[in-house]
Image (cartoon, rainbow, N blue to C red; front, top):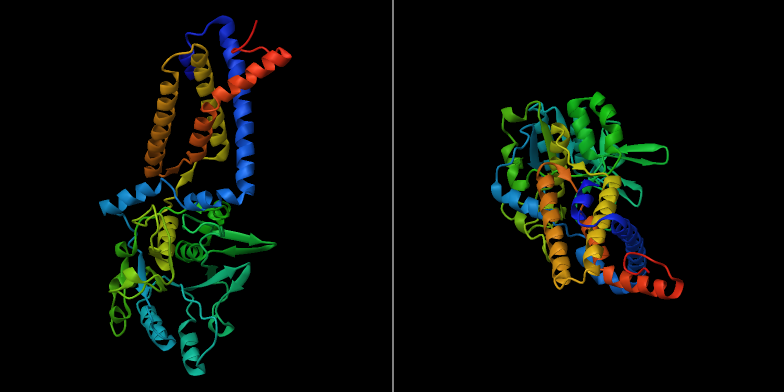
Length: 404
């Protein structure tokens, strides 16, 4: 109210109350129009190209673009990635065997052996998967679990789903859901199970409620910013000291020389260098999992401004803006349109800047809807004035614009 009174300090007495009432009615009118527009947009295919063009764009990707240029990531040294590239099952078993000899605390295996193949090599691989340190990955496809063939699941309960989130309409991986419930059954994600095996069951009990909701991923590095070992770096090496008691995540990371041109198991993320326009997927699934594990271990979450606060601030800013420009509109200032356009532009730019600043400090402030509603509502003042004139002429409804 202090801000509102400072803006309208020149309005006194009866005019102040009339402006307040007119601003409230204009706000209701603009919200109704906005609701109709949104309803039409949802039901007309005409708007589909526009919706599809912007659904995976976020101005917050500018933050990651600048962050990648800085190259000063603070990565968790307890995470080591191992690339299996195009290895067969016998070669994968050899790699896993040599990894276990280095005594890591957790081995996250982001590989799904859906079918049994050669009985001899399958049995050899199964033997190497019997360590309690393993966490296995599986996937949900239409609520159907796709996991390892029964032979390979040697350790009960040590598995997590590899899906990042369950929003099929979004191509960019910005969020993840750590715990998912289907009916009476509870499922845990692959990164959550890795963190639980590393930190302890008490951590999962404490975080279970928090992880049931979809959360934004705090990305801290690309493939180049993690320690990656190839099979040649492991096989036959008697001792690798930096693996002991660490988290080793095994999966596909492409060829070490040509991985930039490999799109197998790659996903779009906010770290894509080309965040506007067409581009190939930029990040391997194992690297995304590593970023999530990094976030879980360091407790470095992005805090999301709640929707109720967004709603409150939208209503307040819309009301203040309408009250101010309704007052100016009646004065018939020659610079009214110029002022209105400048305020709309400055408001949008300043709010984007504030949102980026907050995001840099770990707070996600989704201001797109706030900007859209405020700017849209201010643009409807002229139409509302005509509507007010109609009601005054026909029904003698008085207000700030028209009264006896």
